[in-house]
Every structure is written in C-alpha cells, then in structure tokens.
Image (cartoon, rainbow, N blue to C red):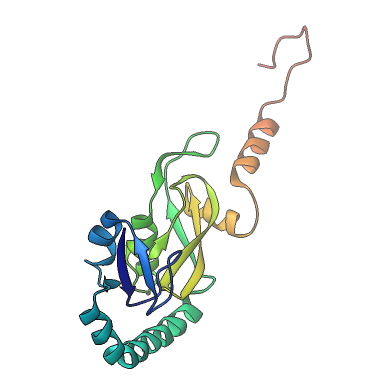
Length: 184
C-alpha cells in the first residue's frame, strides 16, 4: 500500500488534502498520472501545505463553472437512433462515447470520461445517465434510444412504440376461429 495526498476530491476515496492508503497500481496508473494525488513524503506534505489555499481556490473556481454548466445541462434529453430487433434489443450497444458525442452535438462540451455508465445500454427506451462535470458536481441527462425519430418522439411522450406496433399488427390481421380457414 502507498500513502498519497489527494489534490482533489476522489469519489469513494477521500477529500482534498486527505492522506490515503491505496494499492500501487491504482496510484501508478490512475491517481498520479492524472494529477489527482501526490506521494505523501515530508517534502510533498510541506509543499502541499504551502499550496493548499491556492489549490482550494482553483477547486472552488472549477466547481463554480461546473455548477453553471450543470444547471443548463440538467434534464437534457439526447436522442440516439439505433437498429434493434423485434423485442427492442439493440443489435449493438450505446456506450459512453456515443452519449458524449450526442451531448456535445446538443451544445455542451463533455468527454466520454465524464459520462458515468454502470453498464452499456442494450435496449430501446429512456435511460437516465449521470454526467460528472466535477468531482463534486454530477447531473443527470436522459438518453432516448429509439429506432427512428418518430419512435423517439413517442418515447419522450411516454408511449411505447413497440406496443403500438404490436397493436397495429394485431388489428391488421384478424385471427381465424379454431377449425376455420384463415380469411383470404
């Protein structure tokens, strides 16, 4: 285990200035290269204490900017058109990159690392997606995954396009009574 000083809040780990013990790989591959932490040596502790006010001011400024963007971004709905089977299962999946591209096309600059997906989206429908704009600011956008623009509008209105399609097919093909030939 390695001792590190956190330079910013890291989710599920700690707050800025906290000394934490982490595994060497996590430190070497994630925290240190992304400048989220530094090794907890005597020299680094002294340096951190001299720079603490400046780091906190920078963090507050970034958080304020993220709050402003988050207020505009909250509740945004992006439409993603994908091919799907009869049951609504996608032939591929919608990844964080697809959602980041759609949000960027809507006028907000986000990268795929800011999109928090527990698992890829593999079905049609409305899916809430978390966007982490800052370690302390996260908003929710809705990914409307549909087969067409009309389907996306129906889903946004709360209508299931697959159910409507099934009803239309049932009305178009009347069933024959048992023992009778189907209508010609």
